Amino acid sequence: MEFGHSLWRKSSFSSTETACVEIAYPAEAATVGIRDSKDPSCDVLLASLPAWEAFWLSVRQ
Image 1 (tube, helix red, strand yellow):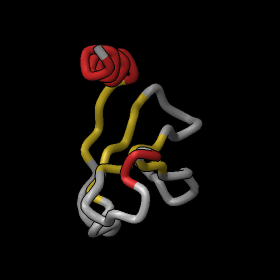
Image 2 (cartoon, helix red, strand yellow; image 1 turned 30 degrees about the vertical axis):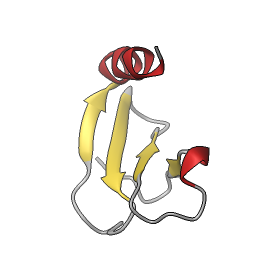
Image 3 (cartoon, rainbow, N blue to C red; image 1 turned 180 degrees about the vertical axis):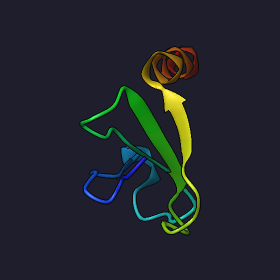
Image 4 (cartoon, rainbow, N blue to C red; image 1 turned 90 degrees about the vertical axis):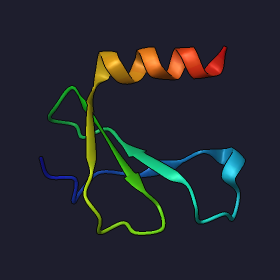
């Protein structure tokens, strides 16, 4: 999956920290890309949108 044109986002709680996880939602797929912000060229972990939403909801509680 190509993430070249995707907007990568990290948590607003991380402020200027570089040791963060970033996520991207590519427009053409129901998949979330997850990567290490310290090394944007590293491999991207893929998760289905339902799996990511379930994870996110469990973390927010």
